[in-house]
Length: 333
Image (cartoon, rainbow, N blue to C red; front, top):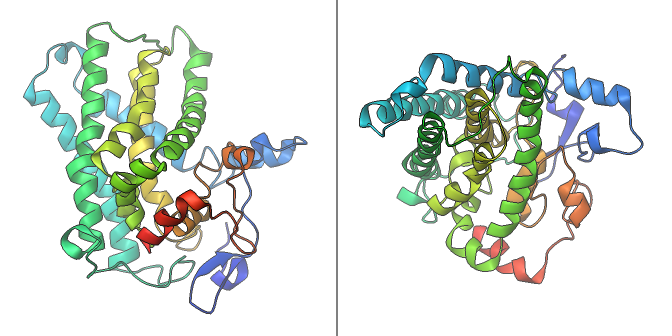
């Protein structure tokens, strides 16, 4: 993929905010009439559905289950030794992905400000953040809450799987369903995220819970998992499908890394591809949610926001301010 300058694919307004030249569009999978060529391109091209992010998550699912995870025979009883091993593994994952993106984009600034949505860097002196520092705030909540809930859900699952309390499948038993389940998880994640996200935007929950995440109107990698503990608990409930739908531990760990690591890419604050086309990154769709609060609650495959009247494609004046959300908007600015 040939690198394009920010001027070629987007524009910068008088305040320094970058935006793409073209309006945001959903993935072609749910567009009508059906466009087979566009769908195939979306599925298999670099930066599309499969490659590289989801395929990397699949690889991490296999790596976690077969190399870095205690065997199910060891997890039948809760023991600090194997729980600590899982916690350490997830800590390393978190710092490689979130810390790595933060290092190259915000410490070394290897991309400069090309395709950066917001012209400013992260706030180092703002009382709305824990420790009065945006980066420290985001790192704290990602680790002190996000890491713990992530590991707790995994511990619950492997203990249940070890004791025969979840429906398990193998590749040999159901090869077609084994492959299909990866795509099912992605779609379930989208629907679940939209529904949970709308729930936590109700006035009381937003005020006491979700507003912590929305401190970040100028997002960066660590913003992705910077949430209130109640939000982490709710956000990860999509993992409970594995207690109902037959799947394998590989699917479960694919699901966990997808939930916990892909927000780093979606919150980089930059539009990809970055570094001369080498790294798909960013989500202007979701950045607009952080900027305006009450639009684009879902993701970019299933057009949930379009179906429910909350979609903003980034062009023209934003018109979706609703009375009950005005207080939310004012609190994050």
